[in-house]
Length: 356
Image 1: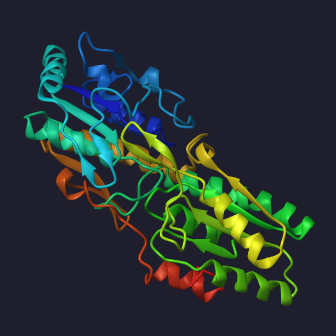
Image 2 (image 1 turned 90 degrees about the vertical axis):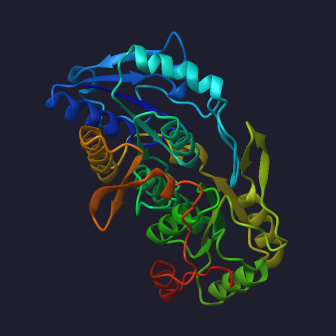
């Protein structure tokens, strides 16, 4: 048996752990592993790949990014926007299939987010022996309770808030931290709670800047002269606007709402306010212990599915157990924060304001 693996879409802490898990589990079975460079593009003739041995993955657990490289551009960029999906041209698929056949790949592990898994499902429908592994720091994929990379991103947010808190306290300022997550508020919610934020603004929960301002004024009257606000990049301003930088490769690139919130807070409260965008710092650096273990387990399960010939499946984490679900159950279905859920209610119970 010869198994292939590729990473597609954005980079993410824990990708190397998945590679380590696949290569290790495959080696134990006496299988060969072929790593394709730069995502699906590595499949196109003449093929850009490398045979991976255990020695190639020694020591990569602690590394961020991916040793195989990745891309969200090129011939296989099927995702064209939130909820809108385009098919990869059949001639591109046929070219890539030749590489797969020439290398005698018996199973192809595709590690990616919603867009990449959409492509994976198209390839499976075309007869490819595909297995999906969910990857996104946004934690917004349906059919899995958690994705690797999320914990590392949250840890980055917490570190940022810890640092902003000291300067906010020193200058009696309001500090606004804009975080990633696209159309889901998981990073903002978890990072805000763990980092001691006073206000958390999410895409799933409409908010009023007046309510936020009133809350900060109340804190001021109670003797709390500094405040921390976390806002998800996909949160909508009260006017219904989503801050966006531009369109990039068909995908809406979000950003800028932190500065908008800071401007309104200063205007409505008179408090000196500063904004900071954490940006790609959330996706960089080494993975946390949780993401290393989760990535390893995902990689091992992918090899198990390959051994069973269980293709068209995506590795899934539910109730502390790693199993699998059909890829189709995971794509086109974004998992968002429940405004009435237990986590939000826990945050409200300790006095966190959601601008409502």
